[in-house]
Image 1: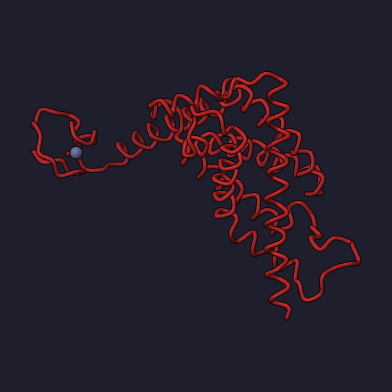
Image 2 (image 1 turned 135 degrees about the vertical axis):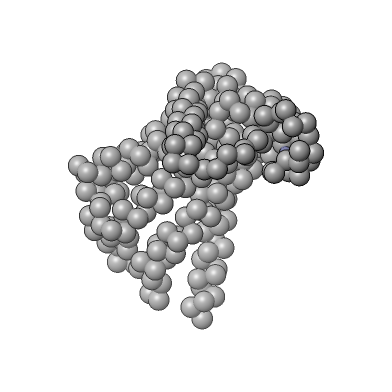
Length: 250
Ligand SMILES: [Zn+2]
């Protein structure tokens, strides 16, 4: 018999392909088999999500180090976690555009608005590229983290990416879900997102303390260094954007 998934031949008695792990399927799809398959896939996926979500609170290092040390099927893998987070933030942006959180004034009330710069347009292009932006934040944080933990050779740059792929998306899934639920009661997106900052920072302090086994003193020092580097890159990026805007105005 030849595997229908990977084309490698194997013994007819086998129920699974020894090469790719694909299940041998000879029956036609029926409504019953479809329902069973849907329930199996959906529920086990769902359980895995709940398990991962819970464990990332209880002991984030278990999920992250587990993945890094080879346990790839126990929890949702970091890329699926990223996709879930992007889906939820996509829903949030859709609600935002539909006015679920009330009118959002992105232009602000300041008088020193830069002329020729369409803030509304700028914001909507951020919306359009949100999945790209979300994804780009992860290697950026991984880079900062690699610099902050320069002396820790137990995590390389790629492994730092896995850490933030879990923590960043975990906190996004949590805070965006909270924003959507609270959005039914509070019609100010600015207030809602401000409420989320303590959760975002608090969770990262907690997770990094556990992952890197830090003392409180080390955590404070490392966090300060992180913020200094963040501020430095922030200024550099603002400077580049400023230069580009200035050029386009000429
Ligand atoms: Zn196969």
